[in-house]
Image (cartoon, rainbow, N blue to C red; front, side, top):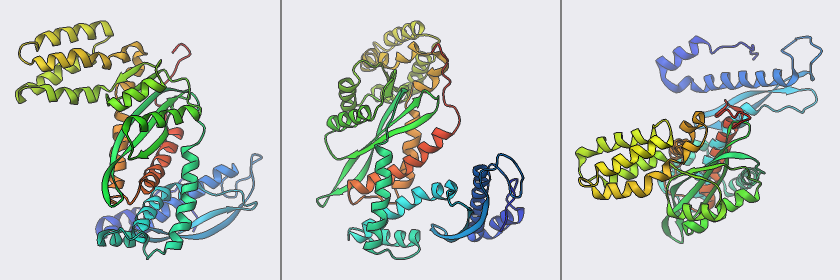
Length: 388
């Protein structure tokens, strides 16, 4: 089947999906990915089909069918070829990577004998067939090799560093425990975001954070001007040990949430939230500190615990005022990682309980690797001027 560079999805396909459900979804995916792969080949060759140009970088050589098992059944794609064999489209591989990691994790649970009937059903649904231990071992080893290489890749200059943690259920020695998943992202000198690292451990939190942050430095992370995170004590101690001289911005979103625990009455919560927004949205630090002083005094009698908490904690959320105003909106919270965490949750909740730390790390790394590639090749996140 041949696809034009300006191809659009046929209206009849959309109508079939609308009227008859997802039975026609595999056809739609086949058309879309085939079109994307052909566009990649044209870009690689620097010439469209039958186009004559001095910039041409080789010649097309037909298509090779490749059948892939997906969550919605087997789909056969037409993979574009070039004569010298140096081209392979990324559209197909990228779209299947995170799904492949999920499949391997579930299959591994089944093979290790720790799966439930539900997990077995999910595995068969995702894989489309039963999976042998040999297949799992080979596929997992190959996948782990590429994921480990990504986790250990060299870093470089990242001016803003964002840190966050989430927790996943992991089985260890017959017991179910909460494993901490540490994630670091940053904004580089190229003004784009990237996910810098991920680590999974059942160990003590401060030691885990310190080891994780040290690994970022060992991989070449440098030029950090600000770290944004929540106020977790283990993270705070590790941050001081590894990045002691780097300013810290306590996430304003988390501060808003933390403050609610000190509000004595339900009816006061919206008022307190509004007072905090007034502080955080001040045009400069001088006014923010003035608003904070007024707010501390306002609640001194009606909510003394809240007033005391604000005095000791809110200043940690005002560091951002020392940075360019055009950057402040995006570096004053760790919401970037909060959104990422929600996306991870949508994938890990299918598993419910991981059989070990390695399975958890495998699935989350595969997703983050794909996400980071999107960020690094996507739109500009922050614009750095020479004077910044």
